[in-house]
Image 1 (cartoon, rainbow, N blue to C red):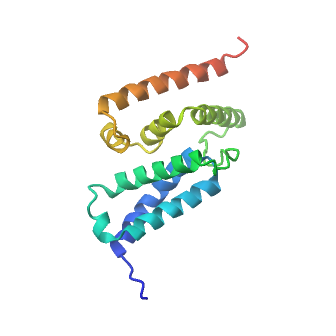
Image 2: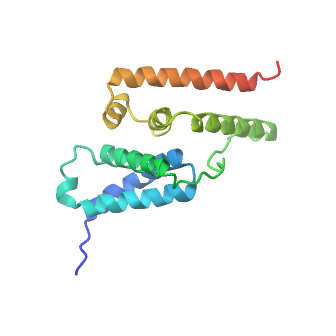
Image 3: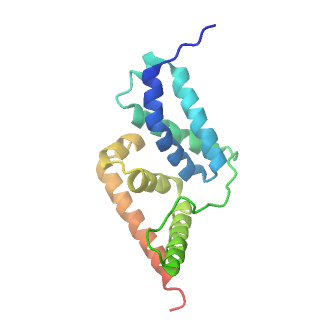
Length: 172
């Protein structure tokens, strides 16, 4: 059996791999689980064949939807093992140690607050605030009206802001 290489698929996947990983990481939390999910999604996309992949309007939107569904299935099947988050992906431009510590702590709190959100809300925040998707793209991925996406995101931001301010003002 001879293996044929589809260069256009390889180029598309190279562009999408990081995005697939970030979404998987946000949903599964564990780095190892996210890496496994990324690999499994890419394999599934490759096994589909060029003829099926060419039917999709947007390979990116399809792969994000596939990643989201795959991760949610993993979470539902209780196979995901949550590992403590690391803040090693965040760097601060300031040279002052105190500011670095404060920023790191604030990022940890925001990460924890996001991770405590229900799955649907976590996905919305990930797609909009981290992946920088447009409202129209998010609506397409999640099969929601665009207006609903805007309202949900506004409510989620207000909720996160309120919780974060409560944490900052604790004891006052």
